[in-house]
Image 1 (cartoon, rainbow, N blue to C red):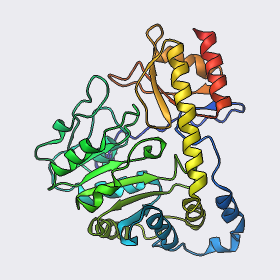
Image 2: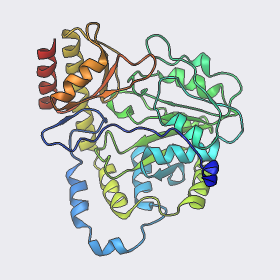
Image 3: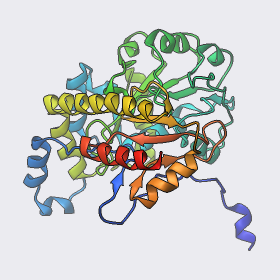
Image 4: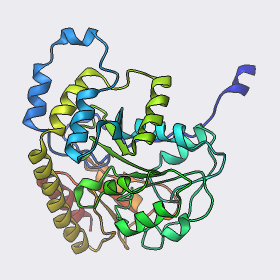
Length: 349
């Protein structure tokens, strides 16, 4: 067909499998194993279905105010979107337009190259070190922008703040995006640096630490000029991004700070206990500051372990990619879910 010559073809992002079977242990998509706060539950129950006939607040003012209040920011230093994926895509559209290649690691969140290909943005991917860490020296030189997760996905490794600042300071002519989807599980946020650098954007999400992957809420925090440019693109693309339930329940959850802290601490404790149990079974793993572990075993391939676990109704994530083909990413579940995982692995080994 002649029209097919004009189709924009890209290789799409492949999300983690969402099994429909009952009695499944789902440790493959980094969802929080614990529910949101009681305040969020009350907010959901308070909403009338009659409100759904009305458009949501295009500025999501109550949610923006709650995020700003939580982090000690001004409201014009916060941008919200439909999950951090939407926020990051808006950042790509808004700031990566110079024609120069943007830079992100070779092992990283696998949506970055999808957006770059879709938007016709050239890119280069410096390799992580042998122990899966970013080398800041690789992020010097002329570029069209920089983006990287911290902690990294899928490795879980954390780049110290002095190294993050080294990258931002060396690239004052470019926008640097630090994707902090997993920062709340034990890492340090780059957020204080936005007061010092007007080229830095920090992106976070409700999907992991705030137990709301199903509502799709993400946000960016940056100098007000960067936020203004992001809103200009948003309002040229889709005025009503976040829906009414997301704004209402997300505001309640952002204000539930004690529940949030307790939940993150609980997951971090289970992560450290699980790391020791993996090592006890002969696994090697990276030091993780996220809500997952990145593991490999010398005696069996990752694919063998992945298939065995799936047969036993336990889902983890396997990436059939260079350098990480023999690793599995395992989300931290409840203590009971992790007990079942390790009972299954003990049988295998």
